[in-house]
Length: 121
Image (cartoon, rainbow, N blue to C red; front, side):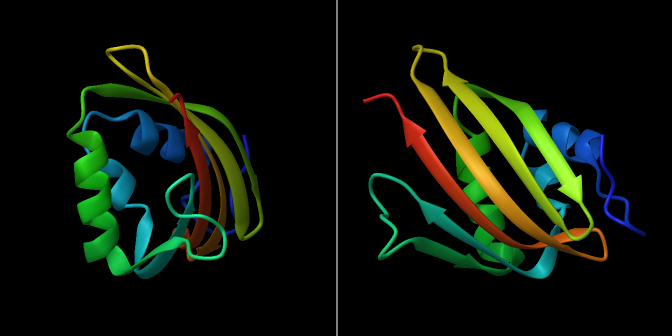
């Protein structure tokens, strides 16, 4: 387990957020001015989906956590003000999603995240 220097962010905190039943715990890990870039089949690297601030990020997370699926934090490495993690998800019909994220931390909160995700088609 790693911990960002001087912060409350660690793998256990992230695990509770990712694997929770609602978006609330995960959203609490983001700074007010956080930004997420999402790259996937629909939003490719040249035009990623970019979400600015906790309100936009919260709407995305509420949508994701309203779906009938499970989330599991597979791996996480925290080093100083950076972290990387893998998340696997599974819908009840068996469709799987894998997401890899690189994040930047400030005062124990996520301020930047780049997420690359892929799912069964």
